[in-house]
Length: 130
Image (cartoon, rainbow, N blue to C red; front, side, top):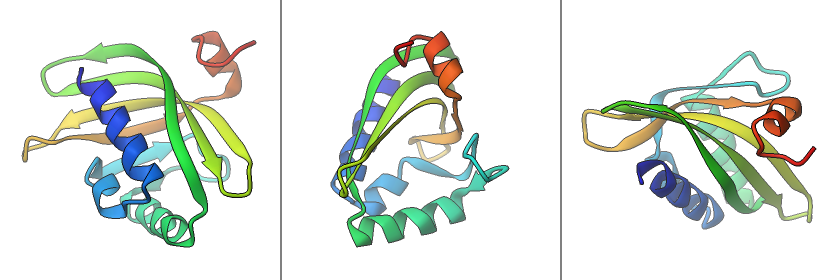
């Protein structure tokens, strides 16, 4: 399944802190919403912050739990999942995310839209325990 393969690759490349491989999974036209304090985040800002975090070794691991398909067609797949980020200080952050993948002209599936869900929404769709 394309969505699961994308999640596996995203988790693997982030955990390995392989910036180049990780950002091959992200479209240049990406928009991230739902991040507290930001209206939206684009590719350049996301890449800059991630590259610094990868180099500094801030990230310990990333994994995804659950995959709830929302919609799909020949060139787009939308799903929800629980993203669990472990940081090298021992802390963890679990958040529901809604992801829209698109098959780009080079034949690679990349995220073009990601929305961080509220905890209430994540609980409602069964990604977080009540």
